[in-house]
Image (tube, rainbow, N blue to C red; front, side):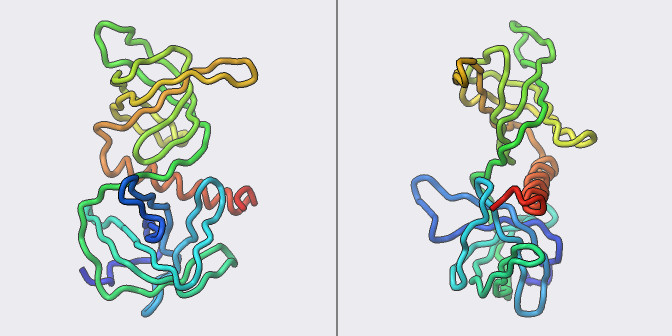
Length: 222
């Protein structure tokens, strides 16, 4: 595919090629095309664990994007980095893009958001239950609950990103564990989305990216 589909404000993901691990896979970090020129692209500098990643000029990165339900990928080299008005990476613009079947891990955003769920099991309570997220990603959620769930439980889930931005999908409990904080015990549950649409996943991805940029503006990210 011709690189003319690369547009300003397009959401992308960045992978650091020298961080790859064949056994554990690698993370793709949310980013955005801040400017698209003839020879170069400006990409929003990626963030991990509330810290801007130290990506150096000369480093090779891989960029993934989605256009009309098709995943594209290209490798490029970081030419320089600018910090004002926002931190960006200046990279070489590719001549063409490759299409891919995208399999990835997702970066998690530590944030407290309200969550609601119903157990999809006729033998258990079907009351609406509430929890609070510890972190979210485009692949699943880690949250705190009052009532213990079981690994393998399936839920009808509502993740409330904003007042009018609610993600509804089924999810499966991957892990349940008890944690004690200041002598108070709490139940933590990790779930993976099951029937989430790509549109919903993109909304979560955009929410994570926008929240990270908001934290940069407020000086909450180093």
